[in-house]
Image 1 (spheres, rainbow, N blue to C red):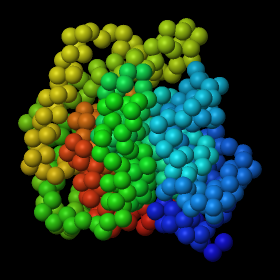
Image 2 (image 1 turned 135 degrees about the vertical axis):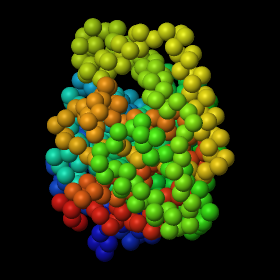
Image 3 (image 1 turned 180 degrees about the vertical axis):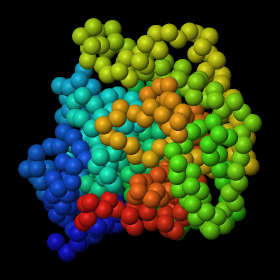
Image 4 (image 1 turned 120 degrees about the horizontal axis):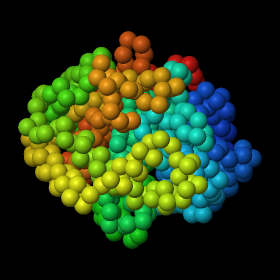
Length: 482
């Protein structure tokens, strides 16, 4: 093998496969060897298929490449899908004992697209039960640990995806984000994640006209790979009537284009929302150093105090979240046997859902609309709005969640992630960037909230920033050198 596939970023890997510099069999062998070496320490990839099956699929991919050329950008890529999404023929547990024995009968829309692009589906990535919470542990597969310190959390709910990409056990990965699940784990693992606008990546759901607050998106080590994976995931689908009509090729074009100048771009630094959000010491300092990189690139960074009741954003989100989760999990709750298998977070959300009132739902929806219009007005003054991606650094993996920050008690299992809720409630695209490390070598990230449907702007900001920092390449997990 002339090239080590693990040393290539995903965009480089796609080119190397397409031009015959490395075979799909060599790629598969290298990644499976890497998984065998690294995964026992972090438990990021679960339900891994047998090696001989995967090697046979890689051989077929080589034969197809020789006959017809690459099937798509992901031709020959070993890919594991977050276990909230179905992959035909693979376990689909959603991290819940209630679904321990379920096997998916069909692919999700994005998995269909990854297959069509040539990906080889090798298994799943770990997630908390039903994606509830930003720490990846469950009663089926256990806890996922941080590549930078295996005693600490990898974040969540896309913790398995982010840890696997950070360790180069996968070239790229899918994730999803309702409450920071493409932002918190990417921050904790020194990689990139993009929460797209609703409808950018279509999904099958019980009510095709409902905005569930959750979206699927890409995880990668750099923004070019992020854009290329989004080009596979995105695009309209007739089964999802609210999907965005813009062709996904715009993202592949972005990945090929030179990095854009950021001179004159304006960033609103929201920080702690005027002291409303407690932060572990060091979080804001790391993010402010990242903001200084943008200043060096010609951006104007201004601290901004919001003339808006920021304390109500989380409270009204709780209502909408409870309603979304109740609609999703009601059949399990109504089955006494299945209900007994549900974890504490799912039970808590369902009980909140049972207490909802029409008046409360109406107020939460009206509040979200007011917040959207407020954010849209901010975007007329600033290109992006910046916040930390988390309020704490990676914490003890034995915890269920942080119960206090800077001496302030957390009153719910997700209050410690309140910093991501303004982005979720806006409906706007949000990109998570690696911001750097504290003195202990623990990673932190920063999120940039772009204007509605402004994924290309988010990617512009990230591309120039990554050109200047190269965090994932410069600071890989030290315990697992290539």
